[in-house]
Picture 1 (cartoon, rainbow, N blue to C red):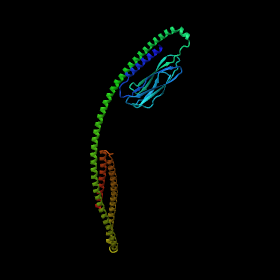
Picture 2 (cartoon, rainbow, N blue to C red; picture 1 turned 30 degrees about the vertical axis):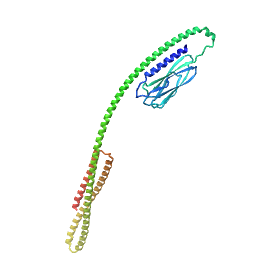
Picture 3 (cartoon, rainbow, N blue to C red; picture 1 turned 180 degrees about the horizontal axis):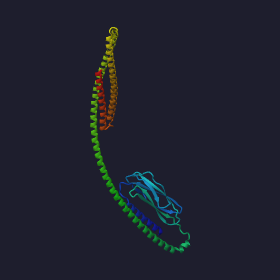
Amino acid sequence: MKNLMILFTTLIWGVFSVALQAQENPNDTKFASMNFEENHYDLTNVIPGDTREIKYRFVNEGVIPLKIDSIIPDCKCINPVGWEKKPIEPGEKGEIILIYQNLNQERNKKTHEVTIFANTARKKEKISFTVYLQEYPDTSDKIVEMEADEEMLKEKEKMAKERAKYAEELEKERKEARKKRQELERELTQAEKDRKRMVEERDDFEEDLDKQRKEAHKKRQHLKKEIEKAEKDREKMAKEKEKYEKELEKQRKEMEKAQKEREKAEKEMKKAEKEKEKQEKKLEKERKEAEKEQKKIQKEEERVAKLKEKIKKYREEIEQTEKKIEKKQKKLDKLTKKGKLSPIEIEKRKEDIIRLKDKKLKLMKKIEKLQRKL
C-alpha cells in the first residue's frame, strides 16, 4: 500500500513538472534554451551514507550560445561537480553532473531541487530528484503478528497525512508556477517593447547613416574638383616658374656682360694711369688735374663696389628664395597627391609660395635698378 502511494505521488509530480515546463517554455529568439532529456530522477534503495552520481543531459535549442553562470542546490548533501564552463553553441549538447550523499538517517522519501542560473529567458532553470530510502523489514514475526492491526492503522493515518501534505505542496507549487508564469509574461511584454524600441532606433540609425553617406559622397566630389583645380594651378605655376627662370638667366647673362665691360674699363684705367705717369714730369698742371680725376674715379669705384656688394647680397637672397619656393612646391605637390591637405591648407601654402615669388621679383627689380647705376 505504501509503495502504491509513493508511485501515485511520483506520477502526479512528474505530470505536474512536465506541464509546468511546457507553460514556462517561452518562444523567445533572443535567449538560449535548455531542453533536458530528463529533468527529474528517482533514486531508489538509498541507504544512509550512500553516494550517488546523477547526470542531466540537455540540448541548447536557443539561437545564442548558452552560458551557465552557477548551480545552486537546496542541500549541502548535493555537490555539482561538472558542467560546461564554456558557452554551448545552439544545437550542441551539454551535461550537468551532481554527486548526492545521503546524510539523513531517517527512512523516508525526500525531493531535492537544484537551480541553474544561465542566460535563458527565465534566467534560471530547475532540475530535481527524489530519494527513496531502502526499507528494512521487521525480523520479528511475532511482533508483526501482534501489532499488525496497529501498524495498519498507523500506516493509513500516515498515508492520509502524506496525501494532505503532498496536496498542500502541490498547491503551493502550482501557485508558484502561476506566479512565475505571470512574471515571465511581464518579462516577455517588456522584452517585446524593448525589441520594438531597438527596431525603431535601428531604423533611425540607418536613416542617419544614409544621410551621412550622401554628405560624404558630396564632400568627396567637391574635394575631387578642388584637387583638379589645384593640379591646374600647380601646372600654371610651374610654367610661370619656368618663365621666371628664363628671365633670371637673361639677367645673369646681362650681368656677365656688364662684368666684362667693367673689366675692360679697369684695363683702360690702368693704361690711363701709365700715360699719366709719363706726363707727370712734363706737365705739373696736368698731373694735378689727373690726381683730381683719380680721386673722382676712386669714389666711383667705391660706389661701384658698394653696388656690387648689394647685388651679391640680393642674388644670395634670390637663391635662398628659389630654394624655399622649390621646397614648398615639392611638399605641396606631395601632400596634395596623398590627399592629406584640406582646400584651405592648400590655398594657404599657395599664398606662401606666391609671397616668396613676389619677394624674388622685388629683389630682381632691385638688382636691375642697381645694375643701371653701375
